[in-house]
Length: 206
Ligand SMILES: [Fe+2]
Image (cartoon, rainbow, N blue to C red; front, top):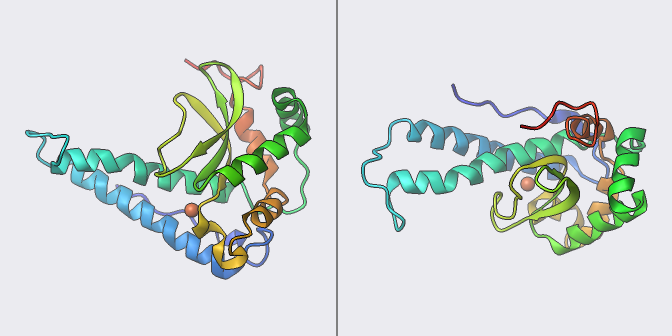
């Protein structure tokens, strides 16, 4: 069954600090495009000829190569829109304490996000790594899947692609990040973090 894009109109009207309705609506349209392409790829993969896959070019091979772009383009945007829109809220105690433990302090974490955002032209994701039990900010660039660490649990997603802020900020990306960090929906982030081993009561990862 075809996937429907989620509605994020709750962010309009100033609920995502520093992002205008014009900017957000343009971004929603881009996100909807990824959902449409993911549906198209999945539908075509159901019927495409798999008898002659090839590294240089083949219909099946090319669909498989582009599948993670549409998949991550869809779900990273949903993670991003889901974790913004609560301006002025404080991070809940569990997440703040756990992150402070991982980064040395909460301020160190925010400084690392800002430095990562200045380094990125794609995504900045705060992730828990099951492989080494570390929390780190990860840059995902070039495509929506390039740079994503294996076996990680995404807790914070920040879109640093220019399309996310350029109408409102031009080249002033640091101002976009500064305002966005004041608009994070920390309750959503905390709920995600509690699903990771940062929470001793979380179900064990297989
Ligand atoms: Fe985006």
